[in-house]
Each structure stands twice: as structure tokens, then as C-alpha cells.
Image 1: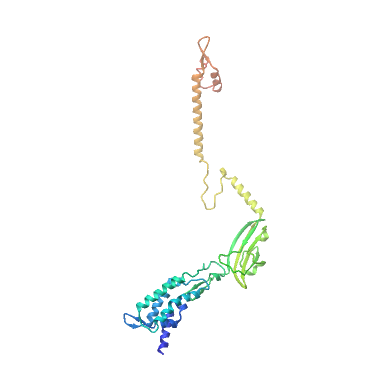
Image 2: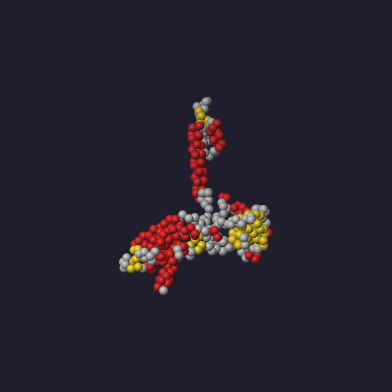
Length: 353
């Protein structure tokens, strides 16, 4: 009777806290044999419940142990083999023998460290890829629940928008980020002119193993929602949706013509500003600065012309007369007077002045 009561108390202590790889793979009977001779040094008494609390601290509450146990599907057997190789020899060593708590702590901690080192070398998996699809290959062993975690995502993926021009090619690829089984079947369905995920609105288009659906020349009748459903055996794995919008060629031509017309109304060939963005900077100078620069250039040209005219008048116009010793206008002076009748030509024609 006492043995049954002790067994019941130990089981309650062992499973009262969160589970770990230890409880998943080590039998309760072996744990009782392991903790039979646990001596609490402070009080010099045998305490099985304290031994179970020590197991809980070293294994159950050790995040490194839990993380080491997150192996891919099918490798839980290797986890049990690794843990049995560490615990069962201790069970045979400590069964019906008294040992201090310090010995237990040292031995159990060494066993936990060895388990972490060996289990961490087992193959890992990439886990689950959101946001959709039944992903059996992404299942990871969970030492807290003692089973494999499934990727609890819906079968239906969000709708993907596709826009194409009329008469152009359109392609839809039924692709997922997780690994698919080898025996898949792909069914393509179509819901004309509507954007939906309601299964009853679709009609089957094609079935087979081809995950690529191609439309050589898109027309308005191709506009709508396309559904790609992948099966493995009788199980549906994932459903992808594509909403195809077909832009008519006439509408596209009108849009381009309108854009060209809008550009023609802008000064300096500027482009229309982007929505919500700053206005484009003009490559030309501001109008006041441009006028100032032009006027300055004109004035400099005028002063330069007057200076050249004055110099020519004083140095080239008058030539000495061969008969009377007087100066007469030269050919240069005559030309300058014709070009500048009101300029400085009084040296050329002193008799007229």
C-alpha cells in the first residue's frame, strides 16, 4: 500500500510541471528506481520528491534540452535512444542504493549536457512557411507536447493581383515555398469576371501535373480569378488564387495619348509630378535671373561696339591731303559715317561741322 501511494505521489510530481523530453522518453518506473536512494544532505533523509524536482529543473525547465529535441519528422526514435543511453545506466547504478544530492545533481547535469550535444546533431527542418498550405514536411518534434507540431495554416492563400495588356501573354505559376510530395495532382479552375475565393464559383479548366498555366493572348474574356489546387492522393494541400485584370488596347492608347497631351502643356518639357511627391525642379533658370543676364549681355555688347567705333574714328578716319596739306576723309571714315551717321565723325568731315 505504501509503495502504491509513493508511486502515485511521484507520478503527480513528475507530470505536475510542463513536460520535456525526459517525460516523453523515460518510463515512470525507471524514474522511481533512479530516485529511490536520493539523500537530502541538509537533513540527511531520503527524499524521492526532491529528486523529481531536481529532474524537473535540469530537464523540464531547460530550454536547451527542449530546443535540442526539435528534430524533423521520424527522428524522435533517435531522441529516445540518446536519452536512454544517458539515463538507464544511472538507473542501474542508483537503484536501491543511497547517494547524496550532490552526486545526483552532478550525474543528471552531465546526462542533460550529453543529450543536448548529441540531439543537436540530428537533422533539423525548416519549419512552417506562412501563410497557407498543409505542410507535413515542416512538422517539428515538440518535447513539451511529446508530439510533432503541425503547421496550422489555412489551405487558401491570399489572392495575387496580375495585370496584363490585351493580346499579351500571361503566365501563372502554382508555386509554394515549402516542399511538395512527389505524387501531386494540380487542378486549375476559373471564375470569370469576379474576384473571389468561393469554391463553388469556380469551374475546372485543366487537371494534371503541370503547375504552370499560360494564356498566349489575353483577352477580356480571360479576366477573372484563377484557382490552383494541389492534391496529394485524396488530400488537398494548398489552394492558390490569381486575379487577372486585362487592359484593352484602346483604353491603353487613350491613356498614353492623354499623358502625352498633359506633357505638352507643361513648360520646358517637364514631367508630371508623382502623386504625393515634391514638384519637379525645372532645369531652366528663374525668369528674373534670365532677364537680368540677357540685359547685362546686351549692354556689354553695346559698350564694346561703341568703344571699337570710337577707336576706329580717331585713328583710321583722317588721312593727309596730297595737294593742299589738308586732311581728307579716308575710305574707312566714309564707311563708318554711312554706318553711324550720328556717331563721332566730326574729325572726318570738319568742314561739315
